[in-house]
Length: 126
Image 1: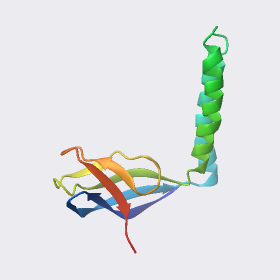
Image 2 (image 1 turned 45 degrees about the vertical axis):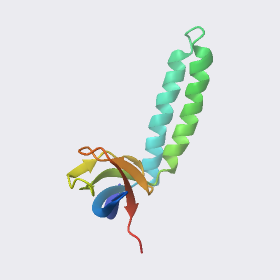
Image 3 (image 1 turned 180 degrees about the vertical axis):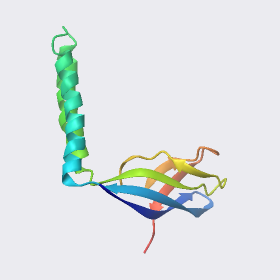
Image 4 (image 1 turned 135 degrees about the vertical axis):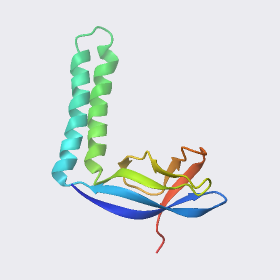
């Protein structure tokens, strides 16, 4: 897995944009397959555990199998994921790390931990 740092902008309605930095992990095909297999295996295990339980198995087993396939495929598609985002809130000026994980796609919304305002994380405009 390789990582790269991208310069992004934090924008809020009525405030000038502030600079942010995002650490993005670029996953190899084998790492993507491993992440998908972990999620797939976890939901298959849930389905297998619920199999001998009367009445519960009518709901949990099909749901577990469906979630195993769907979430496994979604994880398999993720080529780039967020590892962390840090920046300064354009409203209150607080430098902070934002809790943002998952697939790398922009724009994304985050909340300031200090002033609790909704912010939008956007890329550099060419």
